[in-house]
Length: 182
Length: 268
Image 1 (tube, rainbow over the protein chains, first blue to last red):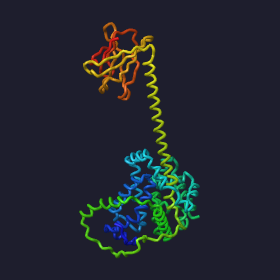
Image 2 (image 1 turned 120 degrees about the horizontal axis):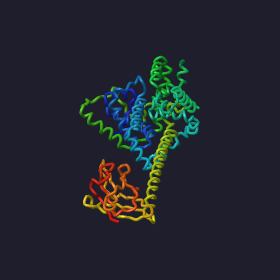
Image 3 (image 1 turned 30 degrees about the vertical axis):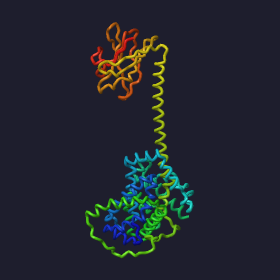
Image 4 (image 1 turned 45 degrees about the vertical axis):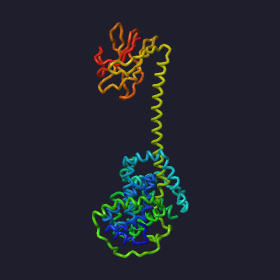
């Protein structure tokens, strides 16, 4: 189903609204790897990641009418769908079993070692700099982004005031931005 | 807040990442309409996140696409969507063409970095959580093994004691395969019973040991089961003399005189 067609984001969106399969195929070819990369980093299990990826694309197909391009880019919308599905999976019981199995087979660490190695960061010189981010800043951003916790939930979970959660999250992001702009 | 303050506040990144609170989201949406600069900043954050995700993609196996399309098929056929012609005819071009051209890495927003974070962070956090779980599991197993070992030790001491006189109780009509063993300490008169080979006592019932003294059954105590599971060797009432031992199945708590079925018996 490889296609040489090229669409602008506008064209792609209009075609997907009317459920054009070629456009969907193009969407998959261009974005599947990017979304899969994000899921893998969240679940640490390539097989499970592909199951979630599949579910995410089916959902994107069926729910495409809900996409509103005035609210953000197509990819941002797709990331959000994918991330929410992944978080749901992480929170479900099924995943815990899955993780148990993966752990037994050592597949988690094998996979991560191959794919999460930081060669790519080193090329932009990020890896060391990220170490300077305070652990409490990192943890809050992680809990929010990767575990889908709301600020209130983080405040409860970590037993720190909501204001502190907000401050740490913002200061963490500002810190990252500084590191990346240097 | 002034435009520049908004842009430097990190709220826009939080908005794009979906980690802002509801009020913050509403606030950003409002600013976005109010200030074109804010809107432009949000778009550049989105683009940065997108280009980062693109650069760090992991190609899924080929079967995934097939599975997705296979699952769309029935619905497509059922609805019988009429062929739709692209609003703008797609141009056939270089296969390597991308949807958009990304600005160089020069200006990466923090949103992109968050996708990096999980490598150093979520990954290790989860590893840590796993390790923590494994450690707790290991500790629990160790505690179980220890308690098992202690039980075994005690059992062995009873069996191996030089004073211990074993008495085999054989299965009777009710349960010919049943068996039990008594270890009777000649020095102290302590009586231990090994009931491992008795059938599981039904719910609400318990085995009761009897010593036959001068031809009459005397209550030797109730045999308990742990968690409805294993019977261990357990200490019963002490007897100075007895001609035989027997075990009956009684309603839980037992009786002063045997009422239930006798399962095993052994003469000394």
